[in-house]
Amino acid sequence: MATEHVKCLIIGSGPAGYTAAIYTGRANLSPVVYEGIQPGGQLTITTEVENFPGYPEGVTGPVLMDDLRRQAERFGADIRGGIVTKANLSKAPYSFVIDEEKEITADTVIISTGATAKYLGLEDEKKYAGMGVSACATCDGFFYRKKTVAVVGGGDTACEEAIYLAGLASKVFLVVRKPYLRASKIMQERVMNHPNITVLFEHNATGLYGENGVEGMHVVKRMGESDEERYDIPIDGFFLAIGHKPNSEIFKPWVKTDETGYIITEPDTPRTGIPGVYAAGDVADPHYRQAVTAAGSGCKAAIEAERYLSAQGML
Ligand code: NDP
Image (cartoon, rainbow, N blue to C red; front, top):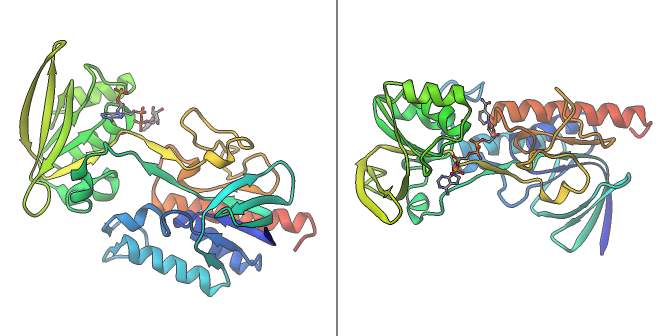
């Protein structure tokens, strides 16, 4: 297997990875970035991004990611297609397998593999992607001012998204499959007491309909042990909030993760506890999950990597 050694390996190509590449490039670390399964990350599947600083007129997700990528390349980042399929962080230099065909070793590593929003698995979620289906209220809620939306899920995220959307939309249906909310008490109370939110307990969304985008959802309501009722609810937007899966699987033997799989870093830093190995962006962030916070943590990771190499006399 062909082997290559690099000073700084960045795994993943969302806002965290590209920002880390810009900073490590400018610091002469000659970063190598592997883009992963979804080059550009989650933002490439959103449409309009209006809350990334520096774009007063807004920008589409793909254009924003292309801008970040080109900015990283300008400073010498070597951005490559490919997926890191194995990792060994037991000792430095750390070693990785790319696409099962190439080995790479690295003095510093920035893990920025992101997280993937979970979807219900309905065909209609794909059909209406970017046309009324979203997994991020903070990103897309603005487009539903004075409209009617549904949020699926019963955890803290779903409650938080429902409350956020209720401040914009005129009506929010929270679709909960169980007869109770899993969210914390305080979030439950806020949701139950909000005049714009109606909680539909023991409901499942089974499909969506509409000519040019989402105009409504099909639901099924469980009634007792064996009975059910099927009906339609007109809505303009359909938000998924049934959890995220951080893409941390191959690193789990070495880094600490919480029960969902988010990498646990030292407080307020991207340090994983392994010297020279950092985690940035959504893979280590169960709370904020924004492009700008991911970019900020990518910057921190890059500065850490540069200082680490400098302290080791490896620059
Ligand atoms: P959770 O796993 O806590 O909740 C997921 C919700 O989605 C559950 O209600 C679950 O239902 C529901 N769900 C899962 N799959 C399906 C499905 N196929 N169909 C219908 N419903 C489904 O995820 P969250 O993202 O809400 O939270 C993750 C973690 O982050 C939690 O620990 C949470 O407390 C924390 N968090 C904290 C916040 C805060 O403190 N402000 C804000 C946001 C998150 P069921 O209950 O039936 O399993």
